[in-house]
Image (cartoon, rainbow, N blue to C red; front, side, top):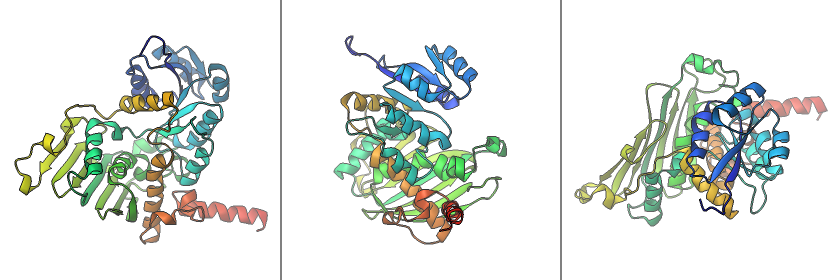
Length: 375
C-alpha cells in the first residue's frame, strides 16, 4: 500500500470460529490495505475476548451502535445464516460495504430484498465464495471463455463430507427456518458456485434429496442432474454422510479433462489437466494450467473485493453473480420435492420455493397468514 492511501476500515460481526479462523488471517494478509477496527457479537464478553486476542480497538454487542460510532468502510458478517439478512441490510443502510459468509440468505426472496438496499457505486453486498479466486479456477474460466479446450460437455460436482450427530447439536443447524437447508445449502454451495461460475447459465435441473442418517429437518444428502445453455450435462452430489471426505469437480472438453480434488481449499497441485488422446503430448501448461499459484482462500477473494471497493465497482459474487447459485438451489429443492424438472424462469415471486428452500414451509406460512386475516 502506498503511504498516502489509508487502509480500508473493517468491522467483524460474529466472533465465532469462522471469524478467527478465516477472516482475521485474510485481513492480515492484505499488506496493510485493510485493518479491523471493531468486532460485534451479541455476547459482549466473547466480543471483548476476540478483540483482545486479535488486538482490535473496539468491541460491541450492538451492530447499529458500532456502525454509528466506528463508521467502518467494510463489514464482514460471520453470523449464523438466519441473521444474515438483518445484519447485511443494516450495514448497507449505514453506508458500509458488506462481505457476508455463505449461504448469502435463507431464500431468493431474502436475497432480492437485501439487494434493494444497495446503491449505484456502493455500498454493495458480496458473499464468501472463495473457491472462485484461486489461480487455477481463473485460468480454467479463461480457457472456457476463449474456447481453447472446446465447449464443455460433461461435468461432475461432488461435495462428499462427513458430519456426525453431535455437529447438529448446535440449535440452528439442520433446520429450514434457521439454516435454510441441508448440505445443498450450507456445504455443497461452494463447489456448486464454482461449477456455475465456470459453466455458465444452467437451463434445467432434476434432483432428489434424502434424510438418511441424521436427525434433521432438512436433507443430509442430495443428488442432481443439470443441463447448461451450451448443452453440457453435470452430475451433482452433496453429502454429509461420507467418511472419506472429498470435494471433487471434473470438466470434460473435446481437448482435455480438467479435474479438481481437494477438501476445503486448493492450490495448483490439486488440479489435474489431462489431454485428449489426439493431444496426448500436450503439457498441462499448454492445456491452460497457470504458471502462477494462488490458492483459493478468503484472503484471495478479499484482495479482489478491496479493489472493487476502492474503485466503487460492484464486486464479484454480488448482485446477479451472487444470486445465481441461490436460485439454482431453490430449483434443486423444488425438483426434489415435486419430482419434475425445474428451469430458471420458474423461480419467480409466485413460486413458494422463491420464498423458502422448503416450499412446504413457505406455503404453510402463507396459509397461516390467510387464516389469521380471514382472506
